[in-house]
Length: 334
Image 1 (cartoon, rainbow, N blue to C red):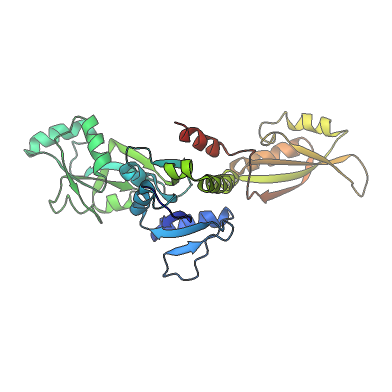
Image 2 (cartoon, rainbow, N blue to C red):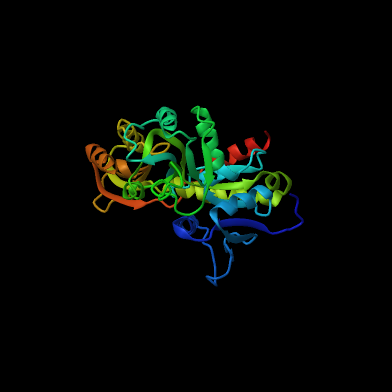
């Protein structure tokens, strides 16, 4: 699909938890969405003045990006895999945005005690006396998965909305659906097959490949989006630690720091002179470490004589060039 429009468009989910989390991600990444009227389906990002934000259903976002009416989108990997098409027009820019995690599974009634794996479905089908009826919102992914397991004659029933009730009312024998916590399955006396995992999904950032190739302004904006989103995601699980350490020189302190397993930081410690009131050779050591290593980092700093330890959150970690942007450029040349 070609277009004469000049505006650059980003589509976001219009409702639900995915919508809330997408807005939160952008805000945290310094890309706050400004939507003066909550009933409108258009908005802006003040820090990206060339971009128009549109709100759509998650499944429609993929179609819009694939067809070229929208340049970028945030939606689930599950709908990208189902509706993205085979022509490569939908390019995955950032496959993991840190929210919307779920899995797509083959799910059977708990009463099917003898059915634990996909291989058991063939024997169950013979006992039923008819092809397995599978209700799902993901017919493409489901068909490919069942074909790989030798169940090509399974009858797929496309449906929207709540699928969990289908086996209990006889509408289908089993379902293929998304699972997040598993609570809904247990409430409806259903369970996922042991080897019934079809896809792991979470929110992702996608783009229209021809728009990136043919419109330099879209390519430039892709870099801005990736720059800030990736820098935020890289920083979110990290903290910055400052500590004062007595020593003869920055080199001597760096040597002590680098003997430890955690406090070496991303590339090494930053060490600067402290002009202490009491005098003496004091230096400030600054490192960035993962949050889950904080207790060990504090213990290591104390072990080398560190004191006055201060811990602060990290908002962004920018690299010379985001690997995601490099991957995008390589994909555009394929």
